[in-house]
Image (tube, rainbow, N blue to C red; front, side):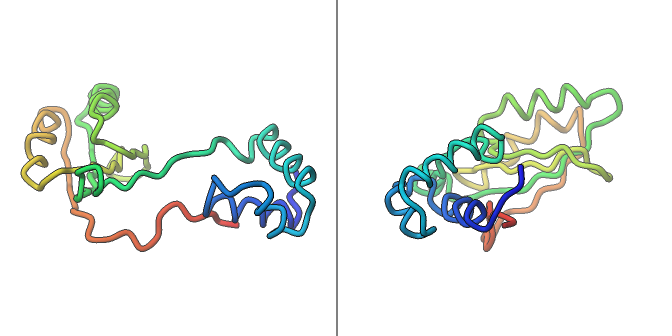
Amino acid sequence: MKLDDKDRLILRLLSDNARMPVSELSGRVGLSGPSTGERIRRLESNGIIARFTLELDLAALGYPLQAIVRIKPRPGNMHIVEDMILGEARFIDCDKVTGDDCFVARLALRSIAELDPLLLPFHDRAETNTAIVKSSPLRGRSPL
């Protein structure tokens, strides 16, 4: 699907606020409400918009800390380690990557004291390297 400037603007505005009413969105892109709604449906049906999501304030939910964990499974443990990551709800993001590490994951933490008990089960099956997140100046920005 070829995107025009209006499509790109719709995507930028929705990536900033997926709950923006179509009436406000249409005014900001300079189209009628029905035309804007049709463009959104077309972007969805063509897979450009995969889903509308909810962004949670983890600190408000009691998770003021986050850690980035690089995980390198020991030989033969790749699928086991992946299942361990998927089975722990406090892993909130995970990418399978190339290079020395196989996974780069993000953990939500109530306190630094939770870190060792969470990672201890991995140590028989993988090497881990952890960094505490100080701030996130850029998250989830659209490349448009």
